[in-house]
Image: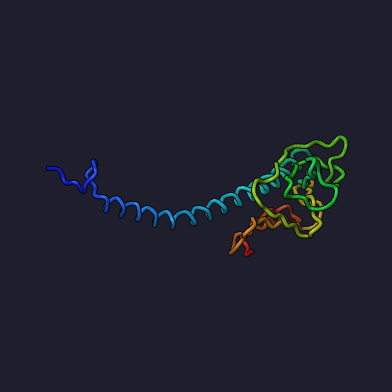
Amino acid sequence: MRNPRRDQAGFTILELLMGVAILAVTLSIAVPSFSAMMRTNRLAGQVNEMVTAMNYARSEAYKRGVTVSVCATNTSGACASSGTAWANGWLVITDPNNNGVTDTGETVLQTFAAPVGNFTYSPTPSSSRFVGFRPLGVVSGATTSIDIYKSGCSGIEKRTISVATTGRISLAKVSC
């Protein structure tokens, strides 16, 4: 004779409810951790793109024997002539006159689109809108650093990319 309290799979309703409760508790712990991991991974992706652009510009300057710059873009997709619009994306350009602007005869080597998400780019000095690399790999200007972080930053979720006058590019995790 069949037990009326069991469903067709052989579980009681109480067993099924306990399983659902355990699943709910597990998800309530896992989802916030997963969100933090996704935020960290998106930040790492943006930082890696910026470091890739810097390394590419440095190697192209050496290869081509001409200054190559990484410049912040304006809303029309060209190098910004003023301000610090790194959140609009950036370009790697040949830049023989080292002005950080795409002039006639200069070539756009690579384009990096504006980041998806709410990222903030904060350069030091605050007026830095480009980083130029001379043919020997050294920076054409002063030491530059760019802080990158996402809105709602807490703890050590900010990243700082530093470019020394020697051309060395370093990365550090810093507090928000």
